[in-house]
Image (cartoon, rainbow, N blue to C red):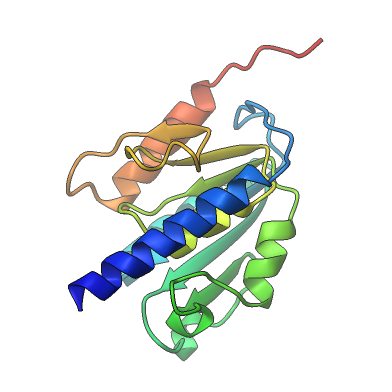
Length: 185
């Protein structure tokens, strides 16, 4: 069983790297202050994480940002608790193919959206969220630091082991707020 997981993982990584070589997008370092459209990806594991993401989305919306959050629920089916809301969509394991590639209407719309910044808030490697981040046309892609993540994200932020999501969100917000990109003339 472990060998099958490794094979799936290798195929998934190969597929994503191959897809990213064909991904044309306008890369740009954008400060949080200058961003207008922000996409947030996250792994929904408990109500505390959902509340932390909701609070962050509201903070950004209060700064006149258009925010779309897409949460991955590691269950086969979504419960009524995870029905789409105005700024929130969800997907589950039933929306993944055999090696973990995500696919449904919400995911397609999220990938095609012209985000200034996309932020992957997952605290550990999660292929479906990494895939969505990777193939997105977002100008700036932000995610967790990891040796195997440099081909996906433009900016990576280190998180300490056993960091709670709310603490990581504060770190991401802090670093994106102090970014000072040089003006392109």
